[in-house]
Length: 248
Image: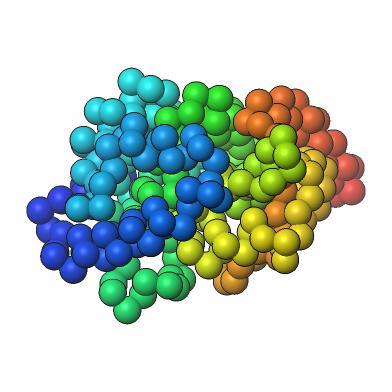
């Protein structure tokens, strides 16, 4: 991708939008997000005053986990996305929503990609899961149906995952929730449906893009994600063999 951030092109409105969204979530999240997310905001040097400069962020981020943020024009196709992640490069859009779009966007902007995702890229075990999940996906690039199943795992963990602490209280680690004021309130409330993390259950569960999720899956720790990969690979292999037998 020959995309650059072109930092000097951001307008005063762009920086103001970042500040409004940042302030709103910084007020909203401390009792809802996992502590590692709040710590990650500081580690990567985010502030309300200006949109993050990817070059400056990478100077802080890469020594921690080997990940770096790379500019993207928007949503990238699944295969390219997984190739980048497998190489510990996180694609982030360089545009930010307009003032009249503060509460709803049809596709993710920089606030989602950068505020929601990047602080979590300071967590080594999380990054190891993310990279290995992507490496697994690259072995199925000839099977869009299996990529779709893997995307469900990504969706219900990296994008919309919840953590259940020792007291049974739900905390947020999914970037799609962390960047949404409405869903961050709904997801951890008693109104939402929450299941324990289970690979088979997730593979059988479709997801929603247009509205808040109707259900969430809770992990007990990031190590649980890492340890789920053999079961995921086994399930995908079984699915592949089953479908290949049907087509013979």
